[in-house]
Amino acid sequence: MLKGKVYKHGANVDTDAIIPARYLNVSDPDELAKHCMEDTDADFVKKVKPGDIIMATTNFGCGSSREHAPLAIKAAGISCIIAKSFARIFFRNAINIGLPLLESNEAVANTKDGDTLEVDLSKGLIKNLTKGAEFKAKPYPGFMAEIIADGGLIEHTKKRISRRRA
Amino acid sequence: MTLAEKILAAHANKKRVSPGDFINVRVDLVMSNDVTAPIAIREFQKLGVKRVFDPQKVVMVPDHFVPNKDIASAEQAKLMREFARKQGIIYFEVGEMGIEHVLLPEQGLVLPGEVVIGADSHTCTYGALGAFATGMGSTDIAAAMATGDIWMKVPPTIKLVYNGKLEKWVGGKDLILHTIGDIGVDGALYSAIEFSGEVIESLSIDGRFTMANMAIEAGGKAGLFGVDNKTQLYVKSRAERPYLVYEPDGDAEYSRVIEYDVSAIEPQVALPHSPANSKPISKLKNIKINQVVIGSCTNGRLEDLRLAAHILKGNKVHPGVRCIVIPGSQQVYFDALIEGLIEIFVRVGAAVSTPTCGPCLGGHMGVLADGEKCVSTTNRNFVGRMGSPKSEVYLANPAVAAASAVMGKIASPEELLQRVKVNG
Image 1 (tube, helix red, strand yellow):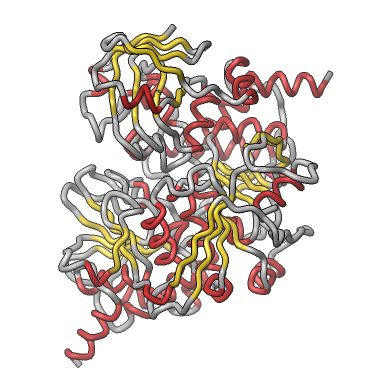
Image 2 (cartoon, each protein chain N blue to C red):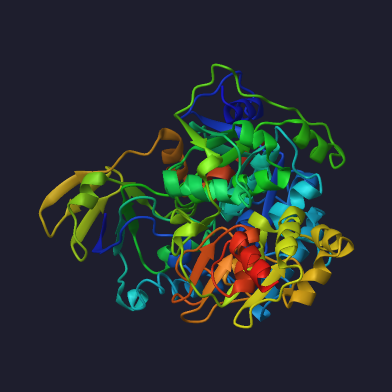
C-alpha cells in the first residue's frame, strides 16, 4: 500500500522539466534526484517525503527518452505517478525501472494539490483520504503486468534468457 | 496493413498485426549515445550475459556532451568507449562521429524496411528512409542489446497528406511545425505517422529527415515515409547489406487521415515553450534575439547549411547576435568545407563547431543566460531547454535562422532581401 501527499501538475510536463539536461553528465539516481523538477519548483526536493505522489493531467513525461527522468523521480522518494495519460517512452521507462504509473481521469479530476492519497497497486485502487473518495485506475495490459510482476524489465529479461538457455 | 504494420509484422514473423497487439520484434539496429549508454551498460551488466547479441547490430555514438564538456561527461564517454571497444560493436570516435541521427543513415547503417530502436527520442528520424524507428529508454536498449528483440505494442497509424505547392523558403521544418501546431504535442501519442502526398514526393531526403525527426514532438512512436527513387538513390551508394521495401496496402486502416493544402503555409516559428506553439512568421513583430543556432539532428544536414549560407553570404551577423553553426556530421562538415560554405560562415562572423548536440539541450557550445532569446533550427523549446529556465527558444527553419542572425531579430529571408535591396 502506498500513501502520500499529492504534488499536482498540468499537461505536457516534459523531461527537461523533470530533470534538466545540464545534469545528465551523471547517471547516479541519488545525484539526479537532487535536481528533480527544480526549474518548475525549486523547493520540490526539500518538500517531498518518501511515499508522496506526483499527479498530472495529460502527456506526462513528454520529450526526451532520458531514463534519468523516472530514475530521478523514484530516487526523490515519489512512490507513484497518477495521470490522465503518459508520453509513451516515459511510460516504458517507468515500468522498466519499477516506478508505478496509474492512469485515472476520475482520480485526477477529483484530487487537489496537497490531498493525501492511498494507492493499492495490486487492485488498482486510488483512495483520496482528504476527500473520502475512491477511484479505479485503468488496468495494465497482461503483457505489462508480467513485467511489473517480475520486478521490472531486467528481471523479466533474465527470466527470458534463462528459458532460452534451458 | 499500414507501412508501420507491415514492417512490424515482418519483424515479428507474423502474417498480420493490428493496432493494440503486443508483439516481440526483431531489431536490425540498437543505438545509444553518451548520455543514455552509461545507464544501458549498467543494466546490461545485470543481465548476466557477456556479449551483445550481434556486435554489427549495436552502435554507440558519443554526440551529446562530446567533445567532453566537463569531467563528469568525460567519465561517461570513457565508460561507453571502453564498453564499445570490449564488445567490438560499432562506435564512432570524435573526429569521425556526427550527431547520431545524421550519422547513421549517412553511413548506411539504417536501411528501408528495418526496425531500429535507439535510446534517444529522435530515433524516429530514420522513418524518412522507410524504416520503423523509435526511441526508447536505456533499460529497453540494455535488454535488446542482449536478446536482439524488444516488445512493442503495435501503434495505430495516422496518415498525413500534403498537397499543393510550397511557397518560397518553406520546407520540411515548416510543414512539421505547422502540423504539430495543428494536432498538438500529444496529437500522435502512441501512434505511427505516415507522411504522404505530392509535396512529400517532391521533398528532398534531407527535408524528410527533418519531418520524421519531429514526429516525437507530436508524441508519435514513429514517422514513416514511403520508399521512392529518391530514397533508393540515397541508400544505394551506402547500403552494404540487402534490404526490403514495404508499401502500405490500398485498404490499410488509418486511425485518422489529415490533409493539408501547403500553398498557404508560410515559414513557421514555434514560440516558447512548446513546439506546438507555431505561428506564421508574418505574425511576429520585432522580437530581438541574442543567439542563433543552425544545426542539430533536425536541421544539421548539407541542404540546411547550403540554405543558411545562401542567406548569409555577403551579409554580416548582427553585432548583438552570436551565430553558431554546427554541421551534423564529419561528412557534412567536410562537404560544407569543400563547397565553400564554411568559408561563408566564418566570413560573416558565425562560429563553426565540430559536430555535437551541444546547445540543443543546453549542454555546451551555446548555453543561454537569463532573459536571452535564441532562434534555433533544433526541435524543442521547452522551459530551460537551452540553458537558463528564464531563456527563450524560437524554433525555425535554417533560412529564417540565418536571416534572423543578420537582422538581430526574428526575420523572414524576404525581409532581409528587401533590406539588402534598399541599402543597395
